[in-house]
Length: 553
Image 1 (spheres, rainbow, N blue to C red):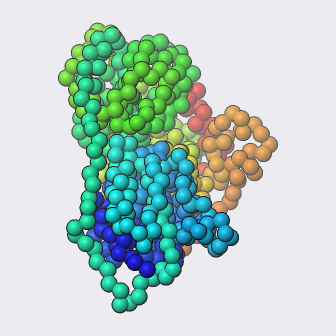
Image 2: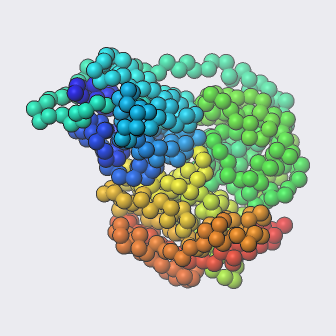
């Protein structure tokens, strides 16, 4: 077998900035495994479970903002990548998937480990490619890998899949020599910038009440500085969920999911809505703006298609958020109406934050425990939030303005699968203390996220264990059904102690708020991976959470 094209593929990955590869063992992908693991500049991680491997790669790419390579054997292996690939697509995270395959003549012939791997991920990748036969033109292979990595990184980043057919033998003989050539072609992307978008801002004069919503975004100090200026100097209310990484913006509006529940307050209705970033957690914010629609919605993000989340999309500025906000800062002049408008948002947000901070329950509830943990997190940390109730509690409680914390959450598809693995991925490539806040269902669902030899010591996990999917008690539909515990919550009596013992975590069980406060002192210190498990009652937590909203109104 001529393996030089495979070594060329790896070298082009390196030349284009790839630094990490996550490999799941197999024979059909042996040449890829050997070539990547022998490259001196690419760090490789062996993870047996492909579903966990893909989420770990996702976490690495979230942190590095570079494509991480995923490598697996033929057959059902690549199908296990699907949840993380979909998350990467909707969360715009670059991944390069390399799936080994049987030769095309053996597909559909009942040969072992054969499925239909071409176009395997459908619309959930930016592009699907087939690598040429290793006996054919190497020039075409060079072109394909260049195009694939460019596509991963262009505009709205995302996953790209290359399917590579291999014939036996899979392993090079000892005397075979291969090298990583330094003279391989590297093609750059030819995306042309938009030139005339600034003239569109002249329409700002048509609107007297402007609101900015920040969707899910990576932490960027320059953007935080601009948003602070727009809030303080331009008097534009800046509304942001916890996953926006905008909690350090001065006068940020962040308790909207509480005070907008059922709201019809026209004093808060904008004329112009400007959105940056991606998805928004707050259902109450979305319902409010779909009911009291702005005259226009401008979406700002470098992506091919703008989402019409609020049913009033008028313009799409396919430019960087920083460039747009910088120009907005220059040209926007706050009117008296704008100042009054910001005052309305700030007044109710301030009142709600005081209510949330002062709210206490008589029992040990999820709300009290989440608030205690969030307050204890050290500045300079990375924070992962599992989906379901973990991200919702964090969104209601919020992070302090003085906490330099970067927030991560798999909100592309909002699934509970892969929360552990994604946190492992970012922690692997970070020197920061990394905390994951998760429920028992999400934690136990992704136990294989620790089944490898790369679990980092800077990872600390808080498991809120109410013995089932507590979110279903919050929803009116399932909460009243007799099948609630068995089929919706999936009531279970497991805990994290066995996982902690099996994978070498220090373990801190907590059955009361006082015990939690005591255990948090050693828990937040770095140096050893840890699991802190908080045991709460689902029914008590449901009642406390609903009382938080009732008592505000």
